[in-house]
Length: 391
Image 1 (cartoon, helix red, strand yellow):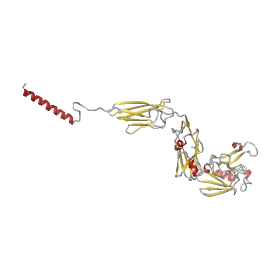
Image 2: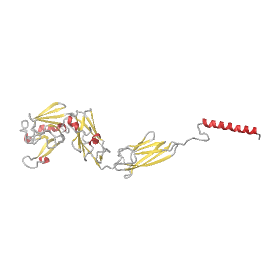
Image 3: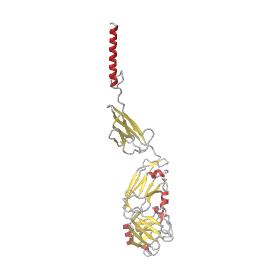
Image 4: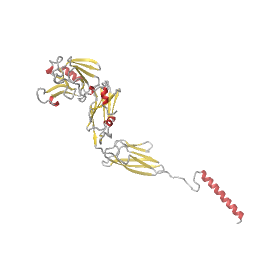
């Protein structure tokens, strides 16, 4: 072949290469490579929490990257029970929907599909903390009580000492409808009370939530369980007992509806002054001085009384006492109780109940202590708010 012919062939080859190169570049492919420039990323299933033991309130979460979730099982390895959970609408996130147990191990298995249709499985182990102790919150009134009077405090009693009172208090919520200002007051390391600034409004609905499960209460103690209480405040019933007049006036929703003669505690055992709240009522009740340490001597007594309503924990009641009828309306002769005749005692028993108020004035006794079921109202509002652990 002549040199001229070689030049023509070479030129043709060069033109062809340029044409091919121009087509490859316009299609977005790398010159010299054929087909797609990349493959679909692999599915990744992330499972949390992981590592150190977590709080039982922290949900198990599975999240899919570059694909979707087909199924998730989280199993308590000791009990074999499955944890409830739900999958998001886009099938990219699964979240457990119930609290986990303390000191437990959960085996988590997640299955999914990548964006290019490939199946994948991921396994993990989730562990929860083991508390040194757990604290149970008892309510007063108990959750089976549905209504109370305007003076009723909300009481939470823990069965363990609470080192971090602020953490416990932050986990306790009280909502009232209509809304009324109120606050918590710690009596000791285990007991905290809530009351409004003034008496509850009649007709109020009170909702209490102790959301303490999984809460660190200090000293290695955690909340044992959440609890709830719903309470309706009935009509306002307030009795005003006056040691000067020896009379007790009864007010319903602020209106005077009845006045009855009384006999309160004698000089040796005067009735406490201040706001008392009824905490219990019994149609028949045995009064026994030994319950507060007087088991013998002239001040000791034991007798069956009727229509008895407790107004303090050291033996003060409103009740019938036929033996003091002659003194009722004229002098104080009781061991600290407010005595009534039979008809008035039954009337009082029929109209007054848990949370209703008995205000005692001019009895000659000391102020009812805050710890004496319920001396809550003896504390000024300014001092009450100082009793909160949350500053």
